[in-house]
Image (cartoon, rainbow, N blue to C red; front, top):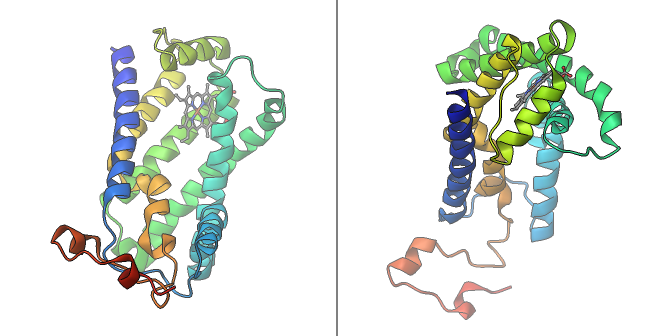
Length: 246
Ligand code: HEM
C-alpha cells in the first residue's frame, strides 16, 4: 500500500511539476511589465533573477523581518535537502562528509524559521487578513516534516542503512521495503503528501519565479517593439523592421 502511494506521489510530483513549467513557458506575456527600476539588457535580467533567487532582493526591500524569516527557512531547507542526498546516492561524494553537521544545525534553523513565519501570519494583523487556510496548512505540513526529522535525529534513531536501501530502491523503480520505525514512516508519509500536492500549490514559485514577467523582462520598450503574442494569431503580423528599432 505504502509502496503504491510512494510511486503515485513521485509520479504526480514529476509529471505535475513538468506540466506546470510547460504551462508557464507557453503562456504569452502580452504586455511589457517589468517592475522598475529594471535592467535594460538580457544579461541584466539574468543578474536580476540570480540576485532575486540567491538573496530575495525585493523581499529585503519590502520587509526586513519577513526577509529574515523567509531567507533563513529557504537557506536551511536547501542545506537539509543537500544532506538528505546521502539517502539517495551511493557511493557518496567526499564533500558530503562536511555537510552532515551543517545539515543538522540547518534542520533546527528550518523549524525555528517556520515557527517564526507561522507566528507572524497569526499575529500581524495585515498579514493575517490576506492569509488563506492553505497558507497555514503549508507551514504546518513543513513544520511537521521538520519536527519528525529532528525527532529522528535527536530522540528515536531509525535504521539509516535500511532507509538508504529503501530510498534507492524507490527512485530506481526496483521496489523497496520501508523500515518499520514509526517516526520515519510518519516523516515519509508527510513528504509524500508534500510531493503530491506540490505542483498544485503556491510552492510552485520554486519554478514560477523564472517565468514572472515582472522579473524576467528587460525594460527596453523604447528600443524593441513588444508585440502582443495574440496579435500574431489574429493575423496582425508585424515585420522585423516594424518590430525593432534597436
Ligand atoms: C523521501 C524523502 C525523505 C526521507 C527518506 C527523509 C528521511 C530522513 C531521515 C532518516 C532523517 C533523520 C536523519 C538522521 O537520523 O540522521 C531526516 C531528518 C530530517 N528531515 Fe527528512 N527525509 C525526506 C525528506 C525530507 C524533506 C522534503 C524535508 C523538508 C521539507 C525533510 C526535513 C528533515 C529535517 C528538517 C530533518 C532533521 C535534520 C536532519 O537530520 O537533516 N526531510 N529525514
